[in-house]
Image (cartoon, rainbow, N blue to C red; front, top):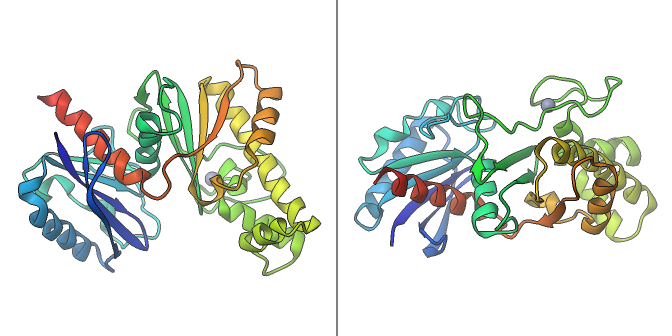
Length: 294
Ligand SMILES: [Zn+2]
């Protein structure tokens, strides 16, 4: 059975583990703080690959940033990772086969292959954290677009210059409302300056009306976005992942979406995999690539 050394690279930590072709972990999932420079990150990758070299068939990276259509390098800015990380030459790290994929795409592939969207040929998997990422499955394949960057959740969803998105610079895009950052803005607007998304969530659990109001506003924008995605992709399922994905009112949101979409009804599911989705998805994509090139 093929085994892949898989890395999930984030701004604060890097997780890594050996994953087999069935998506099972072989041993522990390890975590380490993300090194402070691109060169230190590269050395960490090299040293770790060397440790596992004799036990693995390939290496996979689930990473922030858009990844090219070939799955070999990052083609965009990578936010809170060190300057120069997006220039990493992943293929030069080892002579084993290497696959690189965006973290939301990797998580989406894990949910499609083994998780909440298993059995669906068309699915949209949204990862809702600080931003909103998406892995989009069309006819059983990951949608990559002409360059590899498809699935950016920066489409206009409101008007009136209410919010300027920090990610794309546009006014009133989906991510600027439906992300954790977006919930934080609703918190400040309704609860007052200094209030955060965490205040909204804890207050909602205690039944505080203003917190419920802020949460519902956030969720209404999520509904609008899912309607748009439903109409464009006609998916069997939309899966919500990430820290905020777990808090969504599923029955209510699914009913609201299906009341307004033009396409036949979709199902809305919470993600099966939590923090491990990127590790598993990237490893499964690497196994797929290995079997296609044999
Ligand atoms: Zn945006």
